[in-house]
Length: 578
Image (cartoon, rainbow, N blue to C red):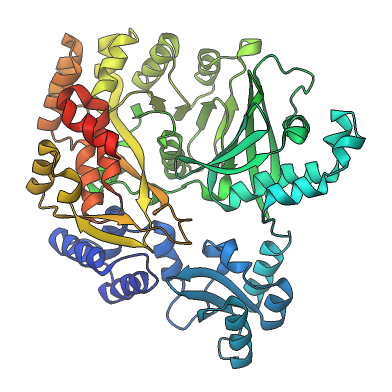
């Protein structure tokens, strides 16, 4: 049985540090009371907090030192003081809460040190005890590299005269300012939690944009004079051919940022103004590793716990590109890893290396495709097989047959939602009896932007949906009169959003659905029967997180936007306003 007193203290701690609002805490309490479950499980299950935030407070009983290694240090806040001051006062500013900065200190009762740090930061501070070892680690980690500001001006100035005196791109790309700029582009992207870096050639110069929380944000513009050198430098880092600019290329490299290993996947493509580069940031420290951390609704989390422990069958995650399908599969593998299982994985490419999993990647250039890998795996006594993506009929047929012959198969499909994935299987010419017999469940998902908890404000739902009858009726039927949005603050860089949260639906195969698959079905028929059989559509999860203030109205609109014909001009008009 859960320790209610301890859980209550943890929830109070989450409210005090701004992770939870009082309304969310109350909603979680009511849900736990109604279900007779754990209060903390309700907080995580409803998407109000991630498991790491709860674990941090669980590991730190009242009065004990906090661990800087377990929190996300905001470097913009940390660099408000110099390294010299941090070392002298044994203090590390790590987070801003409204007009107060939280500072980890070895001695929170040192009034002189408190005064020095407060004067340097020019704001109120709240001191939290941390160990000497943690303070030393943080100083070495976060002040090991100089903070780079106003990169355009700095690099433009440092290259003055250099461009005129060097007539070779090969020499220029090895110049120290270019080397440092390439490094800083990656390190700053990691620190800002970006998933991708886009370097887009223009008629004059190069625009750099970071994708943060699913949205591209312009960071800087690179001068035309150094554009070729910077692109060449990044291609060299990714082991790509700098002499070939007419054809697309792929590459990758590994670097270290703040003592974290970062894998970068690079892709180049020719455009009319030069080569465009996209760098995918793969930060191992940020990948989810537990099912608890995915933010699954409670009923899906419980169902997943059951289906992951069957000996055979196929589980597929479906959704558009960038919806977090691979993360969900990795979390499932983490649950399944043990010394008694042989887990085999085929990916394109391998995004993260998982201990205890035999991972391999496809090489179409030498004929090593998904089907070829799968044939070899089936001869190596597998218990669990992960197939990164089912792209063609041959791979799909082999995956379903493997699931039918005594193996648990995890894979992904591109589809808008779970019912449409059943129709997608028909379109791929997979034998209906294979789908009906082997498929255990389909999990559809999206990623929605999380409203910044630091600057979140409440407003009346009618302000947005008043002119859209079907949305107004939907919110009214769920008794949702208020919505939330972020005003914009330093923590969210003025966007009103910080981080992302998953939206999910789960279709479990039932006798009725199996019969429909064997007879042939449409998307509409599959959706209607799946709901009758217990599936909660993804919009239900979105509404739950909308009510809790975790997401904004955009999360709901993104789901209904795929069904424009169903709602006509009402939704189109509202989308144009957003």
